[in-house]
Image (cartoon, rainbow, N blue to C red; front, side, top):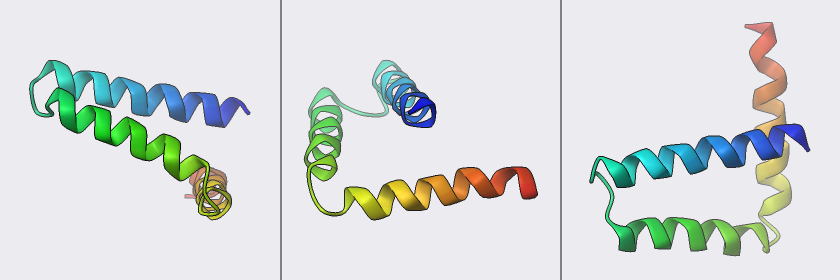
Length: 62
Protein backbone atom coordinates (compact mmCIF):
# COMPACT_ATOMS: atom_id res chain seq x y z
CA UNK A 1 0.00 0.00 0.00
CA UNK A 2 2.78 2.42 0.87
CA UNK A 3 4.49 1.79 -2.47
CA UNK A 4 1.25 2.39 -4.36
CA UNK A 5 0.64 5.69 -2.59
CA UNK A 6 4.26 6.73 -3.17
CA UNK A 7 4.03 5.94 -6.88
CA UNK A 8 0.75 7.81 -7.20
CA UNK A 9 2.34 10.84 -5.56
CA UNK A 10 5.45 10.54 -7.74
CA UNK A 11 3.47 10.33 -10.96
CA UNK A 12 1.21 13.14 -9.77
CA UNK A 13 4.21 15.37 -9.13
CA UNK A 14 5.70 14.57 -12.54
CA UNK A 15 2.38 15.37 -14.18
CA UNK A 16 2.13 18.62 -12.17
CA UNK A 17 5.61 19.77 -13.22
CA UNK A 18 4.98 18.86 -16.86
CA UNK A 19 1.85 20.99 -16.76
CA UNK A 20 3.63 23.82 -14.99
CA UNK A 21 6.52 23.85 -17.47
CA UNK A 22 4.01 23.80 -20.33
CA UNK A 23 5.58 20.62 -21.69
CA UNK A 24 2.17 19.02 -21.47
CA UNK A 25 -1.14 20.66 -22.22
CA UNK A 26 -4.22 20.42 -20.01
CA UNK A 27 -5.95 18.15 -22.53
CA UNK A 28 -3.02 15.75 -22.63
CA UNK A 29 -2.83 15.70 -18.83
CA UNK A 30 -6.52 14.88 -18.64
CA UNK A 31 -6.07 12.04 -21.11
CA UNK A 32 -3.08 10.71 -19.11
CA UNK A 33 -5.00 10.75 -15.83
CA UNK A 34 -8.14 9.21 -17.30
CA UNK A 35 -6.18 6.46 -19.06
CA UNK A 36 -4.61 5.62 -15.70
CA UNK A 37 -8.03 5.34 -14.07
CA UNK A 38 -9.39 3.17 -16.86
CA UNK A 39 -6.25 1.01 -16.94
CA UNK A 40 -6.60 0.40 -13.20
CA UNK A 41 -10.07 -1.05 -13.73
CA UNK A 42 -8.98 -3.56 -16.39
CA UNK A 43 -7.35 -6.94 -16.12
CA UNK A 44 -4.00 -5.32 -16.95
CA UNK A 45 -3.75 -3.83 -13.48
CA UNK A 46 -2.57 -7.07 -11.85
CA UNK A 47 0.42 -7.66 -14.19
CA UNK A 48 1.36 -3.97 -13.98
CA UNK A 49 1.29 -4.10 -10.18
CA UNK A 50 3.36 -7.30 -10.19
CA UNK A 51 5.91 -5.77 -12.58
CA UNK A 52 6.16 -2.62 -10.48
CA UNK A 53 6.61 -4.68 -7.31
CA UNK A 54 9.32 -6.79 -8.95
CA UNK A 55 11.21 -3.69 -10.12
CA UNK A 56 10.96 -2.06 -6.69
CA UNK A 57 12.11 -5.26 -4.96
CA UNK A 58 15.09 -5.59 -7.32
CA UNK A 59 16.40 -2.04 -6.72
CA UNK A 60 18.21 -2.89 -3.44
CA UNK A 61 19.96 -5.79 -5.20
CA UNK A 62 21.69 -3.51 -7.74
